[in-house]
Length: 533
Image (tube, rainbow, N blue to C red; front, side, top):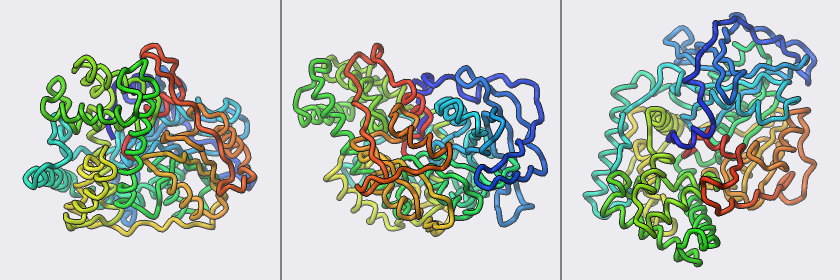
């Protein structure tokens, strides 16, 4: 859940920093359901929308809505949810389309502008595209920040080489959990996906809509599925892209990530080897991978530029597992360090891809709060240790790093809930997108979710390894999305276990990163999607 300055700059200024025009009160339009043909009810207290346009999304508007911290006690302490929207302009509206970039802990305010601009203009004009910061996130209040500077470099090596090193890392994770309980103890019992899903229904009522349309990436797929389970009659259309396995929430899902990210790291090494003329790191993928681990050993002894140790190095290259558009930039830094001992190149890549700012601290605090509360985690550290070493022996790239990222859950100060069983036959057919080689949400999750949501359509990107695949430059995938959002149409079926299969986009060219022809839409999307979920 880091916020990478260099990546976000490519997206344009975010909502947080722009000048707001004079307030203008505008209630949500009296929408007409294309399915039912009846007017949706108006909100009792119309939202007040103000201009918060950015250079990239000048039509963006913002508002806030209050929700109960504890939905079982509506008159108790409230939270404030920050909203954004691109309003519809067509004569007939298909209602609100709520969009979420994942996390948990990802800010969704800029997502409204991105989705509205990435969809065909005629289709986008039919929706009020609504972004939101979930409870605890970003501009929503109160916002969590459990332990500032927790990720300040240089952290201890993620792979413990002794019992004492492991104990140090365990104590560090436990200190984060304790700090969260001390600072946000009144909030933590209500930081969970069910509460966030109930917030969505508060937003729906504030918008004056009888039903919502929902489009979520990554963790946002689980949030959408939970909302659909709680409020099936309120779901009109449901799009899930890069899908969380609902049967693995959350410990088992993270173990699956360990192996999938290692496979993507090997794919990166193979791409570097294919482009040896550019990077001069060897033509054999195994040799390239060995060079990467040699670099890891070197920065363990002497952190690059005094701030990139092995944990920071893993964090820097982890985004390449989410999006291959980052590979040229990462390969340049890799080659510069190995071939020329250019430590500043590696440190700059760390600053761009992995350094954690205040927004990243907020995102990680929410990530842990939600994942630790949503479901049970092992309380016996021997389970964590044994499972991690077993996975590490096969998949060493980020297994221990991922364990420490989630280790606060081993001593979390709030008891966990039972995970929601998202099986559902009471909603309209959903549309699900999944890449076969996705590392953050492995392929099996998309298959499982499609089985849990009866009548849904699964669209597979064959050979794709990116996380977040629609509105990212693949015309085949986007055509299915557009048809579904236009009239609810699902693919007819391919007889291959999925309703449709699309080829993945080509791998990036190995041109110098500064001169490479960028996939502008893909870069914009992946600048908004949070890492780790």
